[in-house]
Length: 330
Image (tube, rainbow, N blue to C red; front, top):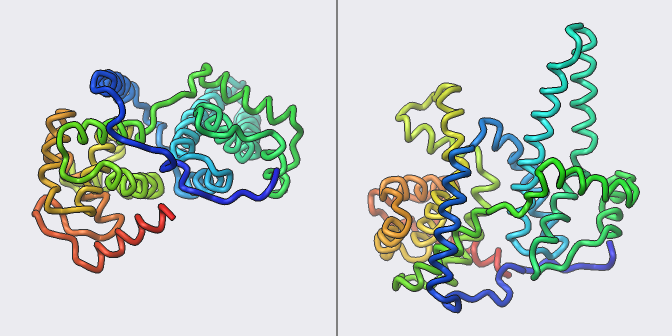
């Protein structure tokens, strides 16, 4: 490392709501809605395969160690996810065009797969480094810092290999790495809620939203599995049903309203209905869908009772949730 770094809550430094003109917020929300519609339409069955908890945790801890904003960690996960899907698709494509020799085909497949595995940590770190370069508020992570970190893990790379890795990621994604993240949707919706007279202060919701968004990334599969089972009213969904549900996993607007609704329930459950009503009128997402998503987040995160039944979280669970939020901001 270049020197000792102390983790901090970078995403909360100098963060303010209510300082942006309403016209700008409206334009930003419209732009995000259009991006979201496109992402949902183009959702691939392969997406989500590289959001495993260990991978996400690695990215989060590395971003924290390098004192990067939370937005960078989410951006890095999204870049890595899309890059690895591209790599996996390329491997499958190359394997299928090889001569029809079963033994040779098997060897080629194993070689390509091993190459992908061997470079995974390097690719992950490159995605974090690239994500850090997208924000003006972040310091860019130097190549020396990255090489020292990799060396500490037992990976010996040169500066040239590091630059080549970054370029491989950029080329694979056609240099389109400034990807939208759920945090952008959450923060834009919080701005709108503030202008609409939301009873829960935006800054309080924001702090809780960050914790719950981390939670959703880390518990991505079980949370969305519970949503899938609820949507089809079947505890054992078929593979086809799971593949069709991919578009829901890429719906960041739905995720954002679920996060905010769950945060409002933790902060002040008496205001939950008002917040959900605002979110429904802003996004057009059905009240039932918002409630279902917030319920899934709460039950997986703090074991809360369902907001759909208008029951309050038991005091010991509410205390645990608030303690989690408080510790994340220290």
